[in-house]
Image (cartoon, rainbow, N blue to C red):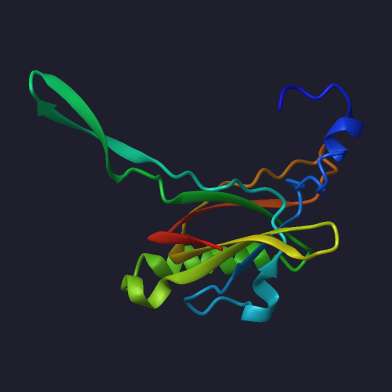
Length: 165
């Protein structure tokens, strides 16, 4: 197709461009956190599309090596950043959930994490469901008198496998 010189040329493709900021993260925390499932339907401030990689497998064949795709080498990890409000519900929920993962069997704390890419009209364009998800790391949050930004809660989630719809 080539490079596009102007936004008008991109718009002429016949379809609206997907916006990277219109994500919704739906997660049901496990482990007796303060939030109900309805309260944890959060719109992530930032996230990434998960990677999908395979490990290389080499097979010797007639004095040469043939490459094949091997086992799944995806990281199965996803970083999300959430806004929080003055009740700190997001922070407290993830804090309690991470604490619970340290003392319970995986079946008790794992959940499903759904990420949805939305259109400007809030219709779901892409849905990814990560099964067996749990928070691996509630990252440090900087508190600073000189900052006027909202409080952001960075969380790293692990998952077993993903289904893209």
